[in-house]
Length: 271
Image (cartoon, rainbow, N blue to C red; front, side, top):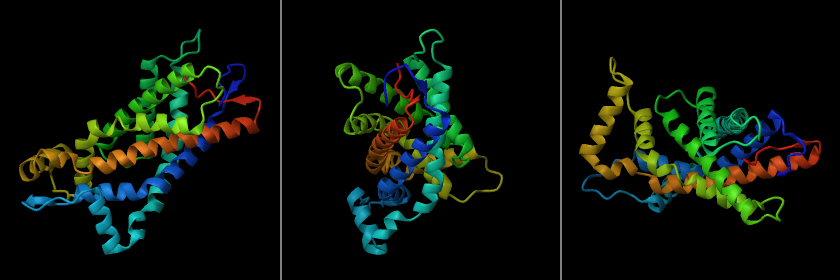
């Protein structure tokens, strides 16, 4: 996508299309890692002195017991969710970023980018994501951090390569990888509790907060501190490469559309 400001910004539809395609590519590539992560989080191994299975051991166990296709269980449901989610995430981020830009310079500050990312997280959570109370917490912070890191590192890369009109795809992928790795460690306890909460049987008369506190207390007493970070390795391996794919594909698709419609320019680059 061009950095020139002489053309109109890309329309809302371009962000929808590019975001949707990027989401589909991420799901197809990273679904096995997500499956392993969830199995590790749901595993009760580690109790009673038993040794918890690691990332590779869990994957091998799934393949041995259920065949390799088991790693792609639920792919259809994932695609039906992630395609509109990513489409809405990118389109809403661009809309919020434009609204928060300085009226005179047209530039968006770092704080404005972070707020736009938070807004994108809220929008996707309300519009698409399953209505679990704890889901927007991870979506919000990760969305804000990912977009902010990506935009700022991308601007730095452009400053270091002033003669390069567009960053190559491998650089977009590397920047996406770095920005995508920032959220998992801060959100791992919430993500693990969310997974346990979704699988737990609801007790009549018990509020969501009571269920969350009960699950967290049981994890602490029965499995220890490390239980809150079960699945952190596959989660980092899932989220970071996933974001690398999403941003690289989004940039590439947007660029292709930009070239197909020369009167339109994508305003993705944060000034």
